[in-house]
Image 1 (cartoon, rainbow, N blue to C red):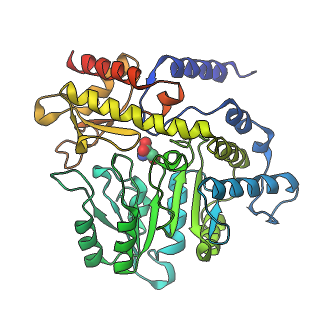
Image 2: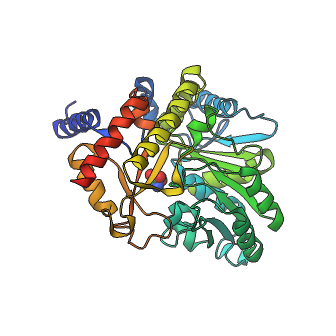
Length: 394
Ligand code: DSN
């Protein structure tokens, strides 16, 4: 590289990634093919619009790439192209979610209507910024109705969610979480959405790889729309996808472009296509099963060592740990800093009904997808649990 400054920083980051135990639940390590595709000449191309309907010339090959990506996305999640459509242009998960709201929920000033309502899990209980948080545009253009987990069980309480939905009559209900480690009953969400006439959207960003590998229940039978990023358990590039029932396709497409975005990032789309193909392999299926075996053993071991695990365990790739334990332990900020000093990378995280602030919350979130890509198994995660325990008690 001619730019020595950036080259040096990339090399240092490569070294950092090699030398740490990465337990960030939303990160993963992509294949060489994906890296190569991301750094290809596709980054030079502008192609506003959709296949055969572009505003620029020279699309002979990029049309084929976008079509192939769509085909693979539907195939991976076993969806018929007669019933489902997929838009592969969202730049990541946040624009994917915003595009859905823009398409399906009236927003302030639009069509003279008052703000439509979106209902999602509150951020502090494990939702996402774009599920209506007041600091996100999703909570400014739309009215947020939030639900949380049950205080005692720390699990989704479907009766309570239904009560909130019936009282507030949202236009769209979201099942999607960044720090919820248990099974999700997508059928119940569908029933709740039907009871109040709402669309049902699943945001499977954290779970996409697990769902593709058959290691976690799929939302597709029940949802109207499913959004995802491609870089978490799916192990692809940083990008986003929106799956929707065929009848919503035109609204969703118009909302992504020209509603929200300009030219698609074709290097990302091609790299997503590579990831989707990789996820079809039997090896990927085994990988997703191993992710869950690893997170279960990590949760069990930490529990044995005296740490409180939110909802008592996990059914997916993540483990939410209460490090504060009502003042008997340490805060999430201190915990994550102590771990980083010893090369274990995690993120501090609020726990449900947290009494501390998001800047220094009561917990940490651990994920096993990245280190499972590195080949780590149960015995390794037993050691990691012990190491975490030693560091946090120092
Ligand atoms: N909030 C990010 C995470 O779960 O890490 C994703 O946007």
